[in-house]
Length: 355
Image (cartoon, rainbow, N blue to C red; front, side, top):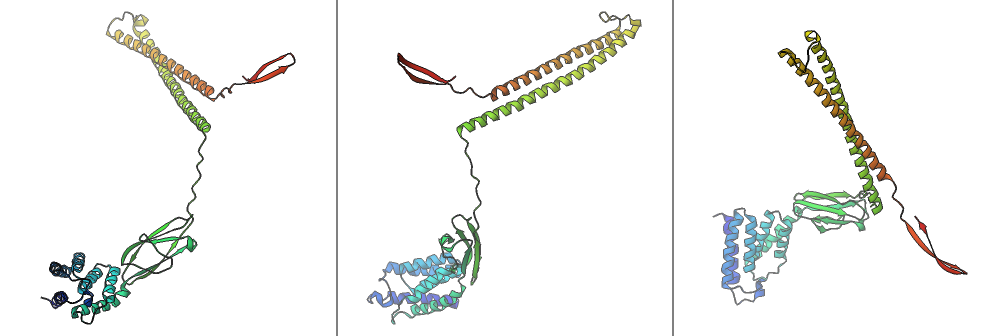
């Protein structure tokens, strides 16, 4: 077994036994809060053995919990010493310092076990060695009066331009002030670092005021939007109808030209004696059928062009009519006022107003 292991177990076991084996000694003699029961003694010994095994295996979080549990059963400075060392291994230097100071500040009687006195001496030396390893962070704030700044470090209020001790690792610092944009930064501290950062507060961006339109304005705006949409939609339909009519007209004219050429070809057959009502032979039948198809196409596309132009015209008239009616000022509200009329010969009421 390594020498350090043996020494530690001797400190824990012998020291614990020396204190707990003297039930007649007053509790204050060794700064023992109260006599422990046999059950508490056994639990403390078992926890101490387990804690040492965990510490030696590098499982410092579990070792810390076990040392603290042992201390809760029976108070002994060696338990606190190794709890502090576990905190150091975990990077929790401020907690380790607190435990070391607790050991150092404890008044031990001259008759206290040597192991307790040795733990106190070790704690005093390790406390001195720990002090320069604890990093500090100083935060300065510009752009605002010191009294108006709210500065926080890891969510805790701190004073500007004052060094603050923190454990190594990442820390978040935030500064806020009325009328200024908040600033947040993340700082990484290493052991022994003496960091100083500056946060510059600038005016918050100005938010443009939003004017809420009145109900009348909203209604007029909605009506204007509807009229605009109707005008655009009607114009699109009118344009599409006119364009379709133009295309169909061009196609109908082409079919008419082809029909005239086909009529000339049929008339040239058999010396102009061909009657398409009663074609004679396959050739006449084919040419007459082609002529008939061209004539039918001409009338079809002519009708399509006509109805496209009619649809475009109807759309144009409807759109302009709706737009004109929608933009006409509404009729003013009619108001009637009654006035009493007093005359020498009698009296009555006079009606007046806007009609």
